[in-house]
Length: 462
Image (cartoon, rainbow, N blue to C red; front, side, top):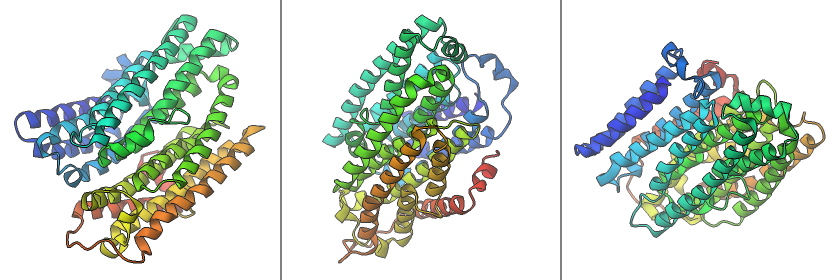
């Protein structure tokens, strides 16, 4: 709870920096607040907040995912000065909205009540509707905002309807009371219907096919730094909330929803990877890549054990910093070329080798190539899922096939950067120092976690 309060107050301070025409300092206010929150997240929770544990509890899993989200947000803030240099008149609002959205994500890590779940989802989502359309002169950004808002409102209706059915049957919003009811009444059709409606709503939030239809257009149309935030921090928050509500609240009816998730995973992996191959725009390709990773993450529901939350955290952290690595490169190219097609990346390695290497290592990690964090993340989830009787082996085979397909579109962009027929970079402008620092951190982190995966547990105090 203390971390949540720090992030919220930091967001307010960043917002008021703009009111007093000190918007250029809002990024530094945000970085300072995030560093303080990251430090506090390693400390024991204050006993004063235990009185709120019926609604929100900052337990070990909540602390782990909060640390990951704050660290990824911190990396994005370091990229902000260059990414938002054409938003100088309202930079403070952008940073504040990102922090408000992060506050919603932190609520989702420790919710104990379905009402708190709903509040967390909305606090996470509403700032994103504004952020997606923050590039006011870009028609694609305007389209992204309205499309995200309309589809988000539609999904919220499903979520509320599902919560209403759960409350009508279980008689409580408390997650553990719902858990007990699911065990005692696994055949209650109204309860099962409520669970399925909530699954559909949260599948929209994580962009699992066929509820992903908004994400390619929204990710492509939004400002690239906001896209990176949605593909990483928002994905972490939304997927953990899905994981938490399904494995705790609806554990007693797992037989009713596990097959539905299995079908959604197959659709997601086939559709996202096939569409990723067909793209000629790197940003849109990364959007479909983001959708495909939800399919791999979905395997966490198969063969659940005591390490499932840790495996999920490892994968999400590896995926998120890889996303930041690729998107930082894309932000730089987009600013120079005013486009994000594959051709815009031709010869990037010759002019900015550190950025190109970071993007290449990030995409190899996303593909699950050995010696990268992404490989260890996929391996741990696949090893867990294959233990699930009947469906486990089949689902892992589908996921491995999806990973193999994804290598093709990742390698296409890597080839453009490192082996072009001629370079398209003929400018003396150099990438900002902060971008190279972030790139080096990402390269080291992805390779270190791939070779020494236990480092993740040690660094996050596990």
